[in-house]
Image (tube, rainbow, N blue to C red; front, side):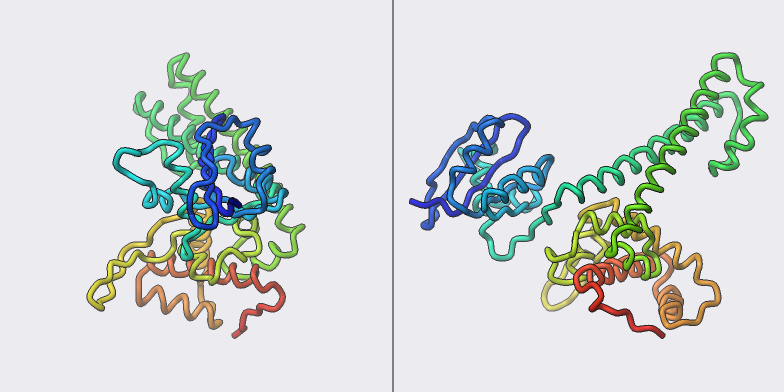
Length: 339
């Protein structure tokens, strides 16, 4: 019988493969496939639907399988768990592969967009920069904690910390002085690397016509535009802007029953990095509002007055996610109505 659906449980070295025919009966069960043999096994199959969890290496395998004519879908692991058989079968690789094979056929299943190599290369820039920023913040916090042991308490702002700490270095004991100096130098080197990555990201955003259109929306800069484009591409994996906002985690969770709608906090699902960029952009919009009287500024000012600062921030971020989807999806056909 012809195999029409395959579920693959990904791993580092040993993979589990589960395939079913048109009747839904298992036609391929291989609980232990070595890494070197996986591509050869899949290449021998007729074009079919392949499901995998969206984990490390999933996009790489998806691109390889697509080259052999297969349709590949990536699923968030939390959406696979309900289809895993319990009882005696329990939790193991073969059960996971069977669950993936079942989940990928569901008509209302939500999938993760498959990224090409260029998208992942740009996201590598973002992830590396993000890690360096976190490391720099940790370095400055470490400096504050160490000098506090000697009775020196300085402001949290990095500029003031670097400006005022020089007057206290001589008062530190020998090794403490040496360590704090090394940490300050390390933080400075991190700042230089962060600036280089930021410039590289902005340059890539300026070279891409699609990324050039996104900063026209208030609250979206080159860094956010680059991250959005690398994460969602042209937005064809989402049916609407609201679906993208929900994927990023900028919509409220629902707890509705009996015809009564109850909305809770934002879900914070999906990519926290994208969400943080959009939220920071929304805060910049509110900070630069001033006395502007265009239609968008009046809407933002009214929103803040009605709902408060933080709800306005989230609403602006969600609006920007929706607008970004429309701009990427429709390109030049999409126009924002001016005041």
